[in-house]
Each structure stands twice: as C-alpha cells, then as structure tokens.
Image (tube, rainbow, N blue to C red; front, top):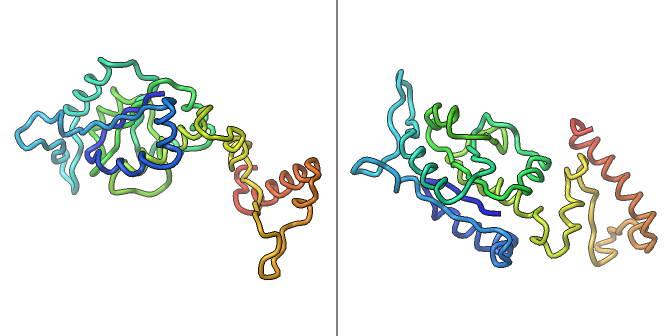
Length: 223
C-alpha cells in the first residue's frame, strides 16, 4: 500500500511514522508513506494557501487552486483508490472502515486546516470524507495519522502476530475483554482463575462473555 498525505506541516509526521508499527510496516516494504507540503503548490510569492471566505465571517479558508494542483501532480504518479479529506463532519471512522481501506493499494489524505477547504474541493476532488470524532482539531494532521495507523496495523504482515489485530476491540462489534499478565497475584489482586486453567475452550468462552458484558456497559450502541 502507498499513502500520500497532503499537509501544511509535513514535519509533524516525522516522529509518528518513525516508531513502532508504522516504522516496521515501512521497513518491511509493506507500506510506503510520503508527505507533501501544500505550500509548494502555492501560486503566490508568499506561499500562502488560504484566503478570506466569500460572504465574510471569521477564519480563513484553504484555497482550491493549490490543492487541485497538488492532487493533479500526484495523480500523474499513481491512480488512487480513495482521496480522503479529514473533515469534522465526515463519516465517523470505525474499525470496519479501517478494514475496508486496508485492502486498497493507493490512498491520498488531505489534511484540513483553518475553517476548512473551499467547498469545490469537497465536491469535485475528494472521494471520501472521514472524521475521527465529534470535535475540532487545530489541523487534520493528527486525524490523518490516526486514520493511517488504523489502516496500516490491520494489513497482513504488519503485525508480528496477525491474529492480534483480529482480536482487537470493534473487530466483531464488541470491545475487547479484560487482559492480565504476570504476576498472578499482586497486592492481593488476583487474575481470574479461568485464565490460569489452561483450558482454551473455557478461556475463549470467558473472553466472549466478558466482551459482551463490557460492550453492554460501555458501548451499548454496538449491540
């Protein structure tokens, strides 16, 4: 998979994609990621990519021209399965969306800023709009990183144990059961005996029951 990220602040991604799973996915050659500075496609001397909104109002708007130029340039190199805009009012990111996107070959993500992008970008240049929550961030870079991470980690071969992603929360519309590690007893707090039994069928049944119960308590809308 190849991911292109269009951003005003490419340096923000340096540390995020240089560690842990995101770094390993690139080292293995499974994923390649490139960051593109939108200001490089500005058509004015000051390299600005925003302007006042028609009709007035507070805040600046990302202009269509540099975005269109950037996307057109990137399209010369590859054909995209999805061109995603990180929009607060986009469809809410879910595990099923991440699973779906993980099957794509080429994805482009446009990071929003200011009061948003010129609406013509959304109407004519974007294929999908995704939000990571009902709140507003200073910029779409964090959202783009979250979207990328959620996609990359479920691509086969990225995790050392591929079954790990399959047992994560939301993969089966349930949240994960509680997990424990050594020691079995700490400060008088004990690990449930069933997890120490060695009986995998009992353990699997316990995990499923716990997932249902925890989902009912914490994410009842999933049920």
